Amino acid sequence: LIARLALKRKSAELTVGALSASQVNAANLGIPIAIFVLGDATYSVPVLLFQLAILQPLSLIFLDVQTQRVSAGILGVLKGIATNPLILASLAGVIVATTGVSIPQTVMNPIEILGGAAVPAMLMAFGISLVGSKPLQKDSGRRTDVLLALTFKLIVHPLIAWLLAAVVFQLDSAGIFMAVILGVLPTAQNVFVTATHYNQGMVTAKDTVLLSTLLGVPLMFICAMIFA
Image (cartoon, rainbow, N blue to C red; front, side, top):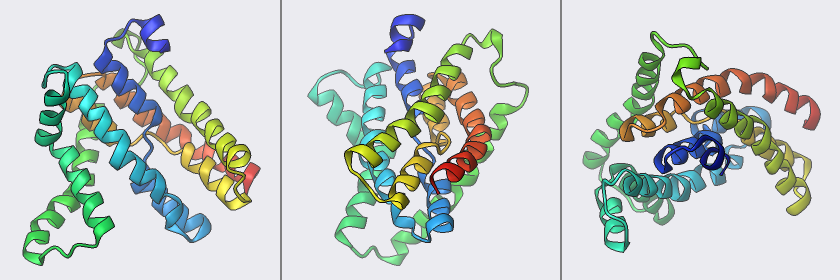
């Protein structure tokens, strides 16, 4: 809303900005941190499932419509779902995980190979994007966008997580601690992949991923000292 009213950004760029401010690295960082801190990876599972099953598919549908890759309306949305490999993969993963369907190994082998290459490929693409650029460059015209996304990601997001965990749901101390830690996790790197795919908000996504990762680590230590 702030970016729309004050910065006059397009709808597609607003969606990428919203993802930059909200989607956390729940898999690559959330699961290891949950295991290391509390010895239980299940704390990060609800966040991971929410992002894969709801947040990411809805965001991709919005981006498909906003960039006019599909037409607005029910048919356009259904076409976007049926032709977007990221949405189909997320839905297939959720279905297999919840139903316990056994996939033949001959089918799983190439999928596992592609899955193993996903994170290195994302890191390589992200590293290439950093060559010849610096975060918060004034001439990019997106410094305010990045600072706004960082504020929501590293301050507002953890505060909302604490409020929900401590006041609304009244979790125990371990639950509150992990809710805050998961809230302060840096922006997921696949947000930059999404921004690149749609050619929208790439500077905002790139800088937010980088800076939230650099700033998120000391913030986690601060949260640990307060809530642990």
